[in-house]
Length: 128
Image (cartoon, rainbow, N blue to C red):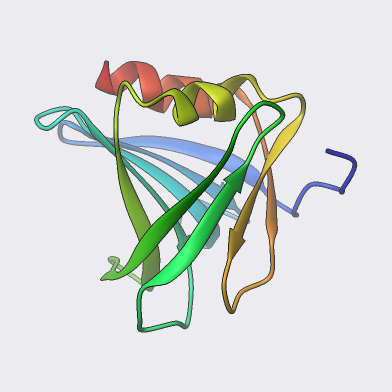
């Protein structure tokens, strides 16, 4: 909770029915992304990575600590390690209300400390 947040800002956009919130220098130069697919009510959480094999990804919030398996996926610009969650998953709520920030720890990558700004809640609400 005391670690400084990773550099960047949140950027929200809609592409058709899909909504995205990306955290980084811009909406095309980011380190972390949340993606809502309202058709399946699924939220993908991912981070840019050079890794090409599945990796453990731990999300740490003020109230929850969960280990996920992130799968490599080709994004529009870069490779992501991403995991899918149901829009009703309580981990998402913990990310949204975490005091200040939450951590994204992925094997082989530096830890990201992402702020719990309104874009996190907006993506969750888009899928519910």
